[in-house]
Length: 292
Image 1 (tube, one colour):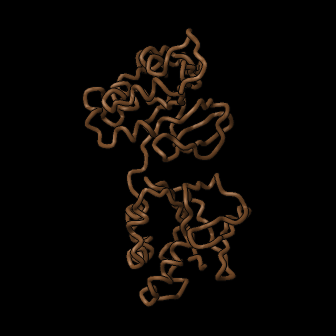
Image 2 (tube, helix red, strand yellow):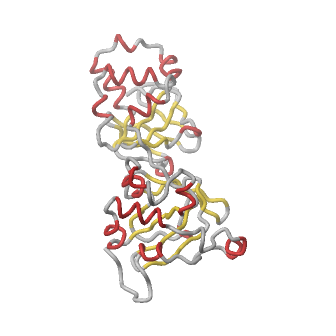
């Protein structure tokens, strides 16, 4: 719920309706980047009305990353057609974080949103981006929270873990076939959330085992050894043991590797393919099959 009241402040929705350049860098205002004319939020407010989220944004203490009308227009969206967007409520909640989060408190990593998926914070010096969107105005105080303006609409994940793996075809076709063979599709398409350390096809080839010859029980044991309950982003990891659904693995952040119980060689976490978000979890790609 909202914190202590200050009669001089407006609620978040009123701030969006009456924004006049607060929180913008002086250089942006002088260059016209955030003039009153182009930093309007009519589409965002219309979207909140369409999704019945106005009360949520007014009556709770929140941080909102607010796309401008210009950001929505880049996607061909305006107050007249925003209501037809599939999954609109999920998109809006992906811009909202519980509590007050000021830009000077942001650190590199992932911040969970009310959508359940997280947005990624990157810092370049003192300048923060959210999912690679810029924050041309920051720390706009509201009665019930804080608003940061973003110059792009943030789009949440739309596929579950299984569908996401399929979309990478053919890179994870062996993994997908193994999940089907072990009858784990419904589990990994469920609510979760799960974190999956996903071996590539090449990783399965290096294993040198014909998966079709394994019993369902043995294959299930191997696959569940790659699954950790909850959403665990790379920024959440630390060196040490991590409990999977079938025993512990050991993560060493000094060289981005994972040690299993069943072999000497370590698996490498592929840095460019970490934190691949799904609707029900997150995938980290590895180059070796882990053996329990």
